[in-house]
Structure formats: structure tokens, C-alpha cells
Length: 140
Image (cartoon, rainbow, N blue to C red; front, side):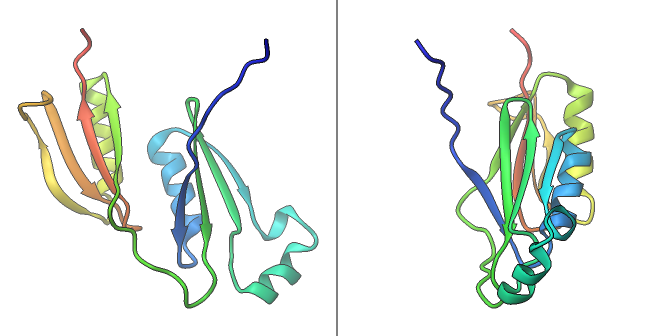
């Protein structure tokens, strides 16, 4: 029997900031970045000039999950709303590091604190407008 893996497509849209955002996430989340941009394809500069988007496909691998992103066509960007990413971390020091890293030039919505659902939980909207719910999940 063949092995199958179902991964929901998690994609983020940016208004010309996809490359900067994915380098930021690579650093904050300790991921492996796979980025398609101008240098990756000889035909890309002509396509970029024709459609106006800087990055058509970015992929950041974090553990067994892939975060995808792209710049949208000029004039079609809409700010993200109605979703957030939850990072469950089993180390209190790493929880603090992630919260502080993603807060860089962002907006803290809820400081990292004790809650009834987690020993430490906080919410930040990063500098690219993406909301992150970061929780220390005490190992059982």
C-alpha cells in the first residue's frame, strides 16, 4: 500500500513583501526556505515584468509542514483577516524566543502570560500583518 500525506495548503499573500517575509519567518521559525524568484528562472524577469508580482511562489518547510506564499498582482492585495497561526511549543524558553522574534516591528495583541488554557500564551501581529498565537504547551 502506498503512503499518502495530506497537507492543507497554507498560503499567504503579500503586496511585494513576500521575499522579506519569508526570510523573516525562516529566521524566526528555524525553517528551511525554498524561494522561487528572479534568480531562480531565466524566464522569470520577463514574466515578472508582464504580471508585476515579485515572488510567485515561496515555500518554507517547518518540521513536516510547509508554509506557502506569494506576492499578488499589483492592485489586488487585501490585508489578511479571519485567521491566525497557532504555534504550540513544549519549551518555555523557546516560547519566549518565538514570541519576541515574531513581535519584532509588529504589534503585541496579548502579552505572553498565564491563561486558563496554557501556562504561557500570547498573540502578536507580525510586521507583515500575520497573526500568531504562541502557546507554551507543558509536556504531560
